[in-house]
Length: 424
Image 1 (tube, rainbow, N blue to C red):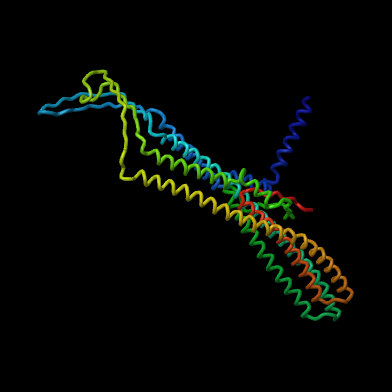
Image 2 (image 1 turned 60 degrees about the vertical axis):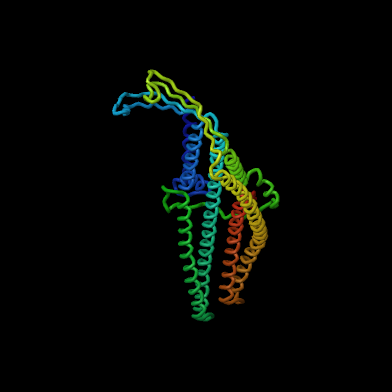
């Protein structure tokens, strides 16, 4: 039994160590980066505190439904007819708003809707943060792919220089032929150095999103995927009404606008307060001790210089404005979605074609180098075949990244994730 327990604990320890090995070695997957960013990003933390503020404001709004009690005490002096009297007072005072035309209830509902809006904003912030991470992560992998392809071309160019030097030694090539590959070597090295700088800048962008505590020596790991969309745009748009944060926020804003309009219309209704005092009251109220005073007070602003009319018109205009803004934003998002989806499908087809071109470019290069060794092709043909292979590889990687970039734009415009399938 003890042996089994020891084995179990050792297995658990190994699992724990291996699960943290990648992060400890600064090899981060996209899921590692997302998890870290959601926990440490200052923007997410700030908007979370905004929700705490809204909840505190809602608590304050609820306080209007309860009575207020206070204790008042102190000396008092009254002077009249050249005489003065002094005394002390100390009494318990209470006040409770019995009725004010449901204005407090409406303010509470508005505050609760404000909480819901901030919750939607938090979800939106987290969603957009994940999209930004995906964009930078795959941008880094795209640049890393280019870096590797340039490295491969550099190796091929070195191989070509050796071949051309052998022919020059045999008198079958000139110094200009050798210089052509030396220039190519310099160009490739320059591009590699530029890509190293661009990759570092992309990592700094990820660090900015992820917050404090992460050094620049981490390495994103993964492959630039070949993604494929299987659903139609209409399939995604049909989910918007039930899941889109934009729709939810617009509905909450519309509800708040309607409540503000109702609140303005109720502002003419009288307000009724209950006031009570008990104890040793001021002398002008009572000389008895203990004394009690209670009253219902009605306050009715039956004329306010048309202020109420102005508030109603303002609230109605706000409701109309929110509705128009929602309709326009919806049209803009739908238009952006259609554009990005059509781009997505176009790039998807081009990736398929470019993968075939890359295979053909590799085959073409192998044919050229064989024919060069046989003396059929010259150095210019060899250099052109290598350049064609490099450009085909880079175009393939670029189109894969463009697909991801447009997928992210589409997801941002409709506020939903797009289901994709990774192609082999």
